[in-house]
Image 1 (cartoon, rainbow, N blue to C red):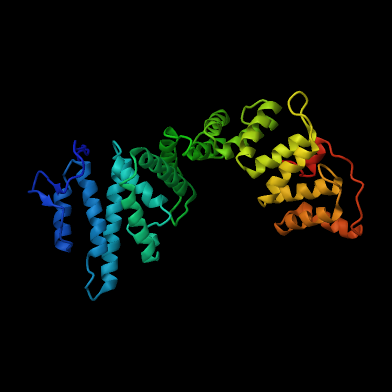
Image 2 (cartoon, rainbow, N blue to C red):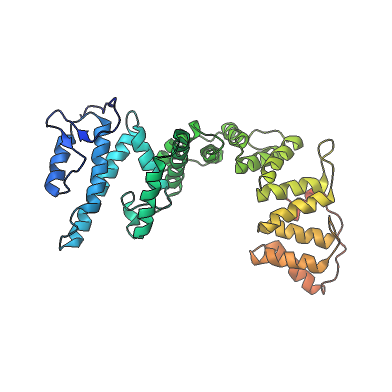
Amino acid sequence: MRPPLQRSGTMASVTLRTRKTKAIDLSAPPYTKDYIDQYRIRIKDDPDPEAHFLYAKYLIDAAKKIGADAKDQRSVRKYRDTLIAESLKVIRRLATQGEPYDEAQFFLANCHGSEAKPRCCLLSCRGLQRDRRRDAKRAAARSCLLPESRIAGRHRRNVNKLGVILLRGSLGQQPNPREAVGWLKRAAEQADEENPHALHELALLHEAPNSQVVLHDPAYARELYARAGHLGYTHSQFRLGQCYEFGTLTCPVDPRRSIAWYTKAAERGHSEAELALSGWYLTGSEGVLKQSDSEAYLWARRAANKGLSKAEYAVGYYAEVGIGIKQDVEFAKRWYMRAAAQGNKRAMNRLTEMKRNGNKRANMARPTRQEAKDECVIV
């Protein structure tokens, strides 16, 4: 069994020492197959994770430079892909086994999470244009000049990205939920106002009754949503608004808390929270929120302006009934048409009814809260 890798007490150096050989000068190493084979043998029993990380980076550099003048470029490409695969295998082991090596974690997360997705990171991205790889290299060089706090923030974002990519199987990767959960937990432990996303993703997993990678735990899901919500994550704030409105995830039905969470998300521009808040203003809540037609219309309009089809339908409904705006059938029809264009079936049905009635004003009574929900005017 190979001995566990031990960390060196120094920063990355330009030389690599092993117990079997003399120092290897990495400042200007050759890029030949013979040298790579010798390097592979020399590094095999080295206990230093830093040395293995340098070896992996050398393989990436070698994959970009070796065989440039060779006639059989097909064989060269195949060999380059082999080197890249070996490099990623080494980095993946450093990042996930034993005591994780921070540099490997950051490198791996950045490879999976970068929009540029350079070829040296993902084999499936061979077709990316050369200028995008060059831009990625420049961005990496600039990152060396960033303050430590910003580098740490970028690391947290990339760890979360990697978790989501592995969870959903995006960017050409095979879904790996179990490994994804590990990355998400690491990101969640370091969550802050700039990086709360992992908390929400983990909450979704624990909320799902048929999750095969984590325990179904509604109370823990609510706790994770709350942590993300307090960090300002609007999707979690909206979800908490729903929980306290309908009494789910072990939450009691509590209009005050529901309205408070919806308001937090709506004030940050979350369209569904804006529509939900519109619903609360439509009916009001005794002792909590004063009923206001104008606020109901304005919040629905804000959501509709963002293209939310349910909100577009609600604005049409408000205009047809005359809630918060003067009754105007033609104006209502325009909003119904916008919602219908996005596939909103209620809007389609309403347009059909209006056409059958000759676009006459409908004598529609003011809805109760339940009727508004049934009509899908509010969330």
